[in-house]
Amino acid sequence: KESDIDENNFQQIYEEISKRIQGQPKKKQKKRLPNEILNYKNTLLFIDKEISRSNRYDTPFSAITFSIEKIIPEKPIPRGAFEGHELNKLVMGKLANILRGSDVVGILTKKIIVALLPMTEKTSAKTALNRILKILHESSFNIKGIPLKVKFGGIVTAFDHNQTPDLDSFISAAENEHNEFLIRLRNVQDLY
Image (tube, rainbow, N blue to C red):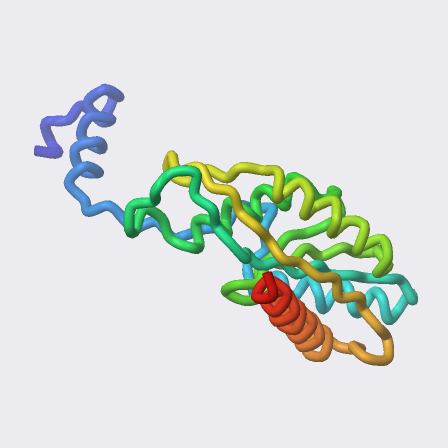
């Protein structure tokens, strides 16, 4: 009974609260991204802000789009051992650690991860892309005790005042350039 609890006895109060909490069903936790990684909505807001700044101050802005091309397990993977979003989350966390402090990692589509590079021209972004891909390809990823080597594809899309003056045109250009890159990459791989 609640009346049997001495309101000045913190041990009794704590035990009663613990009993009540244990009796309640646990809430299902949401699949949250780490704080340094933007979800789709916030990625679009960040890009829109950078486009506005680029238009206002005539500054450069680039985005690097990444996708996972091949997963090479170092040991057999049991069916259903992990979900794709878990690998994407791990990759985005690695990207967040590789990038400069001013750069941001986000989600562009279910299969495209984007690194947003404010104040960065296309040539510098291409140099960054090569450096990032080298680090990612040398990295080993581990999900639930399963070591994986992952191969990535990536391409740079630079903001252009004339061709991509707004959010929709920039997103469309980034997705189209990325998809065209993937088609070229697969055609080259098919030759070998």
